[in-house]
Length: 167
Image (cartoon, rainbow, N blue to C red):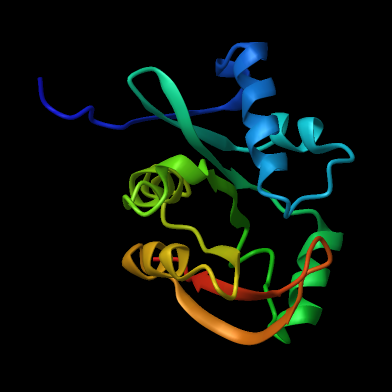
């Protein structure tokens, strides 16, 4: 038998079973970059979420979200970059790949599905400054690194901003 092919399933959150949403939230929290307060509600209001599975085993998740004004301001202040809500309405976020599945370029198909759901509208994404694999994925998807690094509020280390302009 050949190697398992990872499959990405993306859609509106209400298209998924409650157990799948719970799994999504658990993986996002495992990433340690997100405020857990109200996370499930934010996930349920996202335009798109995606699951990456291999042999029916969940390996990663990600979301295309409409960032709150407060979150957008925090990113703007940290990165010293303006993110106009009309030209950049979306954020690619909550991307988490299980440690056992990393270094296999799995974030690319996961993020590609979410970027395509933005229908050519502008998207920003933040990433840990030392997460070179994610930086490579974002660059392959047409994002450019912009602004300044800033300290994460959730853990040690810095964050960087990536931007994909509207097409």
